[in-house]
Image (cartoon, rainbow, N blue to C red):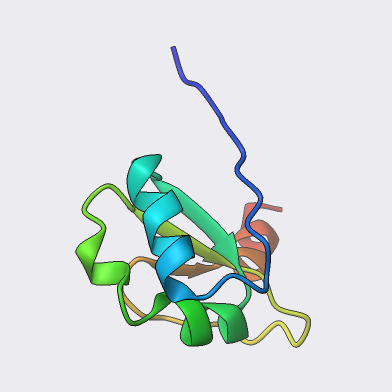
Length: 80
């Protein structure tokens, strides 16, 4: 049985509060923007072993191909 728990993160959180919440939750997926990823998550993403996917949503719809990061818009377009 799969379970989905959403944990909204306040955009004003710094990297450490975000890292702590993701680690405590053993988060498997993070949905964020490319800008917030680079500012707040990139520095510690590799230290979260449970984090399997990072889904990036972007207004400019530019694909990003870096380990564990998936452009959500491109993924949804490909599903059509």
